[in-house]
Length: 138
Figure 1 (cartoon, rainbow, N blue to C red):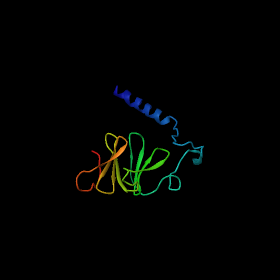
Figure 2 (cartoon, rainbow, N blue to C red; figure 1 turned 90 degrees about the vertical axis):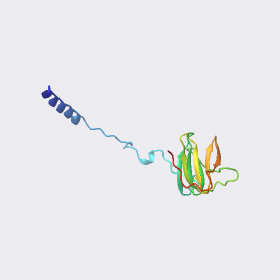
Figure 3 (cartoon, rainbow, N blue to C red; figure 1 turned 60 degrees about the vertical axis):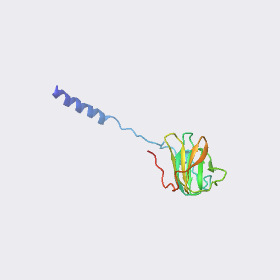
Figure 4 (cartoon, one colour; figure 1 turned 60 degrees about the horizontal axis):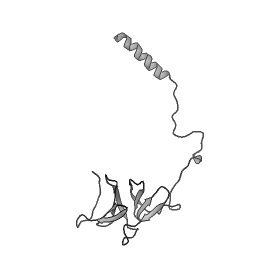
């Protein structure tokens, strides 16, 4: 029985090696790059600009972009600057963004407070007298 296994193994290896190799391409080689749908967002188009410090996606599908010019929400088509409250301007630098296990957005703006999005509204959260210096998820 051991003698039969060696020839069968070599036959299988030969079949695998003899089968024609096929190309696996991500793009159709007969199409020009200009024929594909693509979009680029710049300050000249619709992106409000600023240095991006963080990006997070919430369970509702929005992309949140934290920049040195403020918080921006992207719905797949439009960028919209967001204010935390009526007393907070939208231009506060955002240092970090994070989504927790429940899908809630946490924002670390410049300053001592932390901001959490809860039920579609932003609320300020304070964890003592010291400024928050980093966020991480366990």
